[in-house]
Image (cartoon, rainbow, N blue to C red; front, side, top):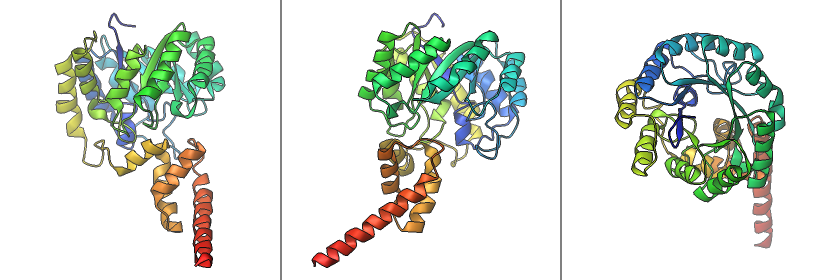
Length: 348
């Protein structure tokens, strides 16, 4: 931890990779990292959007490999620490060793909110290599606060120095955040973090709610760049926290300049985060953004409103990797609609 009230981790070069189809070049990453270091950012995370090893046909090929990105970023960081992301089943020990060799300070290990038990060996690997290990519980809105706590305790037992409540689909309301973060803050002996997405327009508000409930480390991205409608916008977050009286390390104007002068020229209209109807319905339904494109296609096939399909999928509690269920759900919904129409005609 820093001496600040709140540690800020900038995800522009990791979660922001989703928004640019993982196409940041090493040179662009170096420029962003340099600007964030100059602004005294606490931590910068660098990885494919789906973590080390994510560059693949399944998750999208990045413009360069992990080694090239780390080689570009590490020389630009002086006081700012470097984090990498590892998802069990995607990242490997070899990639973790590479990150250690290149100078990473932290590794954040992410699992689905009910699957912390798959991360035990990964925490052991990280601890053996002397890195700070944080645990991330993705899609935390899909589990009750008590279940989130149970899973967080497993990560604490495995060696996590902090556990994050991740609002991966941007589906939480402030009260949802307070309940989960507050319970973890009361019951864990380690730090608690929060990671927001802005699909309901609550990225900053939910982050504040998390901090008020006890989170001491939170995430954001320059310009809010990230999956869906993006993450909490870092330059806004720094300014809001200062106005609220919190002590933070990053320089407000410096972070503003990093966003405006360095990142913005790299972006296009297609990559700028936007709270549009697509991301709004994803947040409303609590469904991860990977379902959107497939749901649109299936909606056309069955002549259904894709928004209705997404809400049904959200009610079912689908998670990443279950995209193959979309067609079955749409077929059932189309059949139900036909049956309802037939019943109505019979009544007439």
